Image (tube, rainbow, N blue to C red; front, side):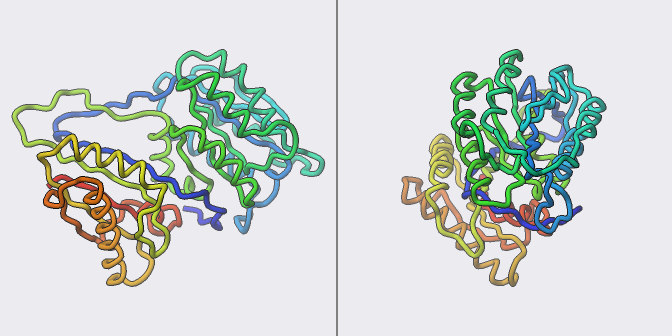
Length: 347
């Protein structure tokens, strides 16, 4: 695994995943979430520059990510394509997805172009991709690889908003960030904030194979049981996992967490007869004893919010696990961020 210097982080974002445990004998299959995907790569001057102390050009980092992502994408009948912006250029026209063709298209991208006088009309690039989207049937994922710098032409956030207005839930825009400036990250965050379908990632997080695999899962497909569960059997345990993005040494509930907590409350309300453990976790930074207390404070914060908002306290039991149950690699900043979580589990 390659370690990179941390890029500027976007604002706190909350997300929730609900996982139901299936019987061991029930197999699962991949079902595609989308019908088409477009890799849209920023080839402006700044993308040919070295990023931080990685020792690599942003474009080469993007090519590496796309190549590894292509290996992870299952061949479920997608149409795949690759286009460049600044200037607009087709590298692979929409066609039935082939790992080999996509990897060849990525390899053909030049990262040695002159950086001077090469401005970034990102908004115009989104205008140029609109006819491509229009010619596709079904649902499309537009995955943009960029540092967010835009210095000429229409506002890319405004243009992305127009794409959503035109295509509705047939389109979801995802941005893989190579930003190291507040301005660039602000543009990226603005596009991400237009829809809750967007799955956020940056070059550092996707350098981890496990996180990359989860990203492909989140964007491209879901796993569903293809065999009915035998009956009778005990009810499956329900786990509600919160990626609440607690800051370092933080346990307080923030405004960004409220919509997700409200969704969790609705689930608990719908299962009024069930009792739950509220389980707090931390990353591995700091002393083990301190992290144990911090995880308990996080669990207590979520428990208190649920009680204050109408959940019977007798149904809830807060527990802290400290750093003992990581789900992600504590050796990366992204992994540590994902490990700062709270889970709700049925008793």
